[in-house]
Length: 120
Image (cartoon, rainbow, N blue to C red):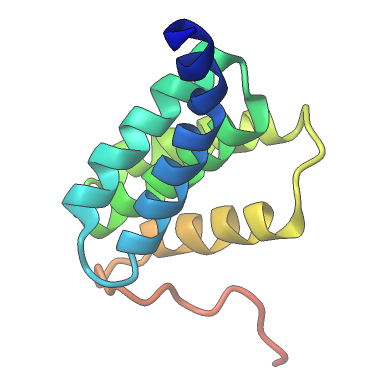
């Protein structure tokens, strides 16, 4: 019975790891966020949860970008974008990827990503 409870809890744990990791980024706890998102990425892959895996890749890329690991962030964003093309994720996930990738290219290293869309 313990095995069944653990198996049923895994998607809940995955969701909790993703939420915690993604919510730690905007409050400046990127190192902690990255640890949770790495665990979420591994669990998503183990469970075969493709959408959650992509979400973890994109949020992890954002955390790594804020930590100044721009090359590593770019690799994560590229992996997320490549996988995104083969799925039907929400606009929220796509927006996360676009703003994260734009921030990765921000040469000032600002925590605030530059404006992606302009009305000029």
